[in-house]
Image (cartoon, rainbow, N blue to C red; front, side, top):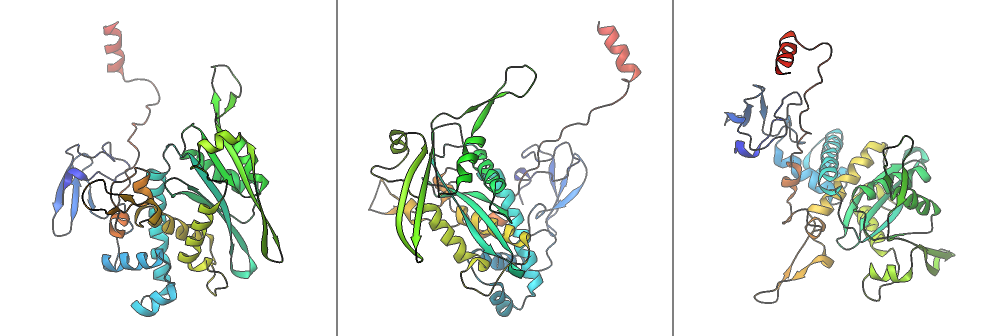
Length: 367
């Protein structure tokens, strides 16, 4: 136990979320509890993680969540480990909610994306319902940028996805590649704008980001067979597209289709012609972020490996998070599930009413 690497999770404490402020002490080594010297409250070591207040062994929780993140059906986990289906579902929701917080803090930060691809997946639900899952990926680092859910494949769904992509992007030249859905073009043009504030009343002028190139890859099928692929630019020039792509690389959407296949393989409810279907949108949301965060931080990607500059010819494996500069090593599942997200800094409440009499006298004396 190292108090110098722990922060107070109490939302009412003035020292919450601050690491290394010498306000944390050890209350019990046996129970693994800390004590905040500022608010005088103790908290468990697992506070702020899905392991908090867990009645089962922590190693069992990490094992089950890892199996779920890599595509093991819940029925197999129930049969092999003797757990209840409701326990497995609850653990997936807890781990997925934690992974979503980690994604928002570490991945949704402005960076130079260079090239982004987006697409949607049609998910079958119970009672013949359908939910659309739209996702985006950064092509150079294979970093999964997030996803959104909706019962309709409409403009609102694509706008929410575009907002997530914008949260991860710096206002620099960017290539956006999608399929032929017209909602993407209007969403990219509407979202990737910056308000120019002049101090005057009214809505500020919205300026489009310079160097944003929008491309569409339209696939035509006949009798369920691909017969033609048309790549066209909606915004930008061919010279701008070539500057943001690899040499002799055509406009395509292969990378987002590959990650779609990864999600279909690792989420039991997305398997084609399978019997496992989702019944709640919250289960799909938690599963999506569970798989996506494990993909970013815990999975080596073969196309990201680099040749070592010294010694014998060896390859240095990298995860998408390592390629994006978020971390310098591959995270194990336990490290991801025990990663604590610091709350925002404490802001003292505003005092209402008249100032105290002593404060008024001091103010008058100073003048």
